[in-house]
Image 1 (cartoon, rainbow, N blue to C red):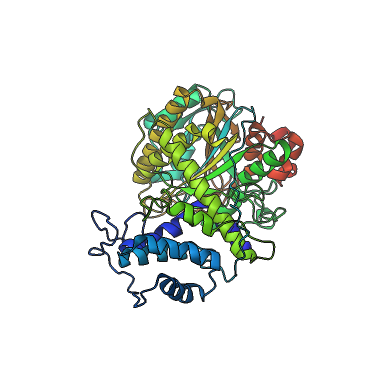
Image 2: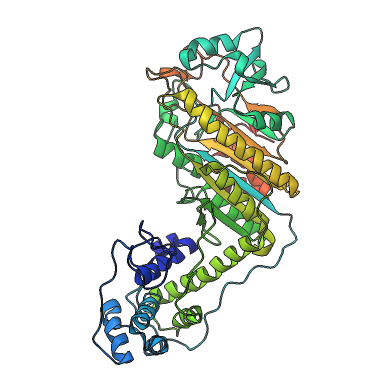
Length: 551
């Protein structure tokens, strides 16, 4: 079913953990429950600190009668005879403690396919096969990290003209930006003499010290004036040439991640299509991870759905089971079925068993892998990159050839207090890059890892009246990694920043001259997509001159 495509391991195990917690401890946070209250310690049957609890009780004395009553209430009596016997046995094993017996029966019933569908189940008596870890392919491992600065980072204060001749572009920048301009003396100067720009050097924001060093080392490249484009455009035609709803968070984020406003490959993202191509062309083992929440970028047609993890990974499934044999019973409840058994029940059981296995594989791998040696920050950016580093360290235990990660980071929408916004956020960003690059170099994986940094859009060159800037279009972005051909600025930084400039439209917004298709295409090829298949990933790539392609 379509909705089943949205169900991944963290959602399945998270739902069941929450149901088990509700049955054992009421609405609380005990063992990843649904509530905010916490019962300390989290002892099963202790409801004193729960905000609510289940009130069901039964007067039935016979185990079969109790399970039949629960089956009627929770599944309209659809639990199969085999599953009912399994639950009756579990209930009986807890007697004479009727409360404990009722709790185990309730937990097992909410674990059945009958509870999660409207189907009846015909068991074949066989164990449902689990997905196996793929064998090593021998292909060198690679990882791509998509870092999304959500809200629209003011990247024209991240990369600023410095030394320019014959025209003093910094003076023009300072005049146009006014009160939000960066002092020349504060900038971290970088050499751009080989980048075919209007300036021989540019300045990076002073909070980007690590990024500046990576640029100097040849491990960071800037993409100048990039943005959502499906074809080159200009002041006269940009409205008719542009599919996206310009300057809006939702549409611009969507198209940056999908690169497909004309929907040539419906409901897929750029990284998801790279993963699809690698699985189809080379049969590589691929995994995809969203940090904190879902994204469009990782959506694809093939292979496992993206996992959603947080800074701690994923919660363990049923960490404190009511019985040591509980997982075995759950697997039997969701065993293999006959061909004429309910299809939706079978789908749930398959998702559930595979989710249990995937959860165990991932949590065991993280437990078996040493923590990172680099010092990561405790902010959301630091914890996200720390988790990415830990997951990369588990690559062999997971049997994976390629990993794709999506990290969102919020609060870049600086309509006011721009200076404070950038100082705070860029410090966190730079610290995370410092720790991550250090960790990858220590592990010998720096050349195997590429970070692409994006944002909804650039911001207006002209400040507003609140000490900030507003939604715009073109912006400047970084790509970082040991395999990056860095130490240069790719694309074309605007040579005129006033309203007379050929790329400048109303309120100091800039029409981009470099597309996201052109940025993602070399990442796809580095990851292993054949040159002839790049258009499957970047559907607009042929609309841009071959001479402008990034090598």
